[in-house]
Length: 356
Image 1: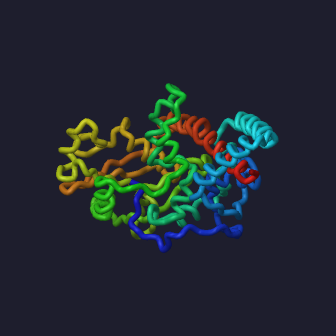
Image 2: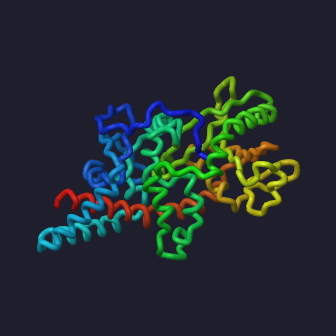
Image 3: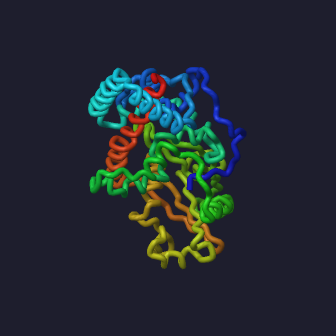
């Protein structure tokens, strides 16, 4: 579920400040993409850049874009032909640049803070607390996260069956702010801690030694930094701290009063009965979510837990290279052909709003 069990110390977003070389760069929001594009070099997939010292804000992106559009209309009404000419030229240049940068590994560096191998673990630590931590939202912005990856990978757009971009999925990537909680979400949050405690007991019995679930923040993919994930925890050996895998917990509101075996009779349920145990269905969205989590965190094992009032079930999941290899191109298509053009357009609106 990607939800925390710890509260963050502050809810105020940090202001722009110079960052020391030992700290990860602050995530540049899409509204400041124009500034970021001028200050950050375009890097390839295998290139690493030094952390940026800028930390622009993103909460006013929509209003700045709206003011930019209004300014353009006023200029047109006043006969400002020179501004129109400049805008046309810039648009052509942006279009040419987008065509010259077809892969997210290059294009996305204009809208994501450059990260090196030391920054990525720091980001994970700084974003612990997840939905209660403002930095978690900032670092998720303009990235495809595991929670939305299944819907994107299964969309008609990502599979080449339509040219129409699913706007709700695009919004989930570029504006991943807090959302209103549904009864099902509230139920899951309230019962997650109990589910984790039950899992720790079951897992300890299974492996014959105590295990502990450690909190975690946002894992950013080391190579594809436009992919990120926030599992519910990292499973470790209690005595040594050795990581055993990831943990993802679901507390299905619909089946809260049933055993997991009874819930498996529902054809839409995520698990299936596999002898005396359970298995996560490969064609279910949660399978894609967990695969994305393991890819982002660099782990090959995870436990998928379903918790109801009557039963806690554990379904082990292993990283599937073939499945992930088929999924990544779909996510990449969405990022390149939907997210990047949107950010380019947003950056252009911000630039012209300033000039006018």
